[in-house]
Length: 155
Ligand SMILES: [Zn+2]
Image (cartoon, rainbow, N blue to C red; front, side, top):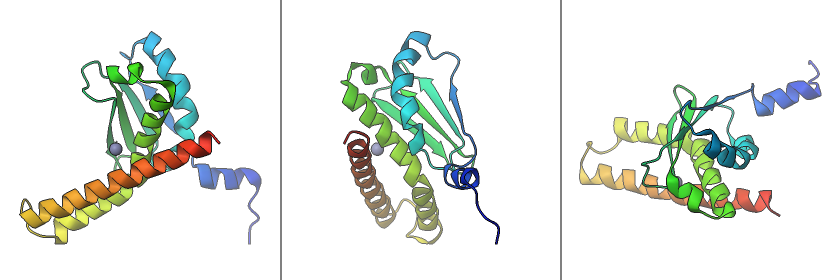
């Protein structure tokens, strides 16, 4: 059996280097505020997510918004104007929350596909109820994970 050296082990748990992309029209002065908060949290990203895109979204009506593609291995995080008005701890926790969504997305994606393929008829009351149960359960789990990670990061 081949011996695993330290760097092989590190690669096996950390995965290959990922790419963080700041969209070109992300204002430099705002990026200078966001990047020091986001960069230390990149360690929370699962290995399946190979590209993270950060977008400045001046008309976003929530603090942050995320879109995720498990199939294409990327996550897009939109930063709205509200994010900048929050205290430091809340800014950090909101990023942790979105990164926890990235962590659970393969589960969400798989269950949603199984529900579509084998669940009640699409758009039926039972189908909508199951989607709501899945969505609410995941949201609670994500927020619990985010708070746990925050406590670990700030013992
Ligand atoms: Zn959420």
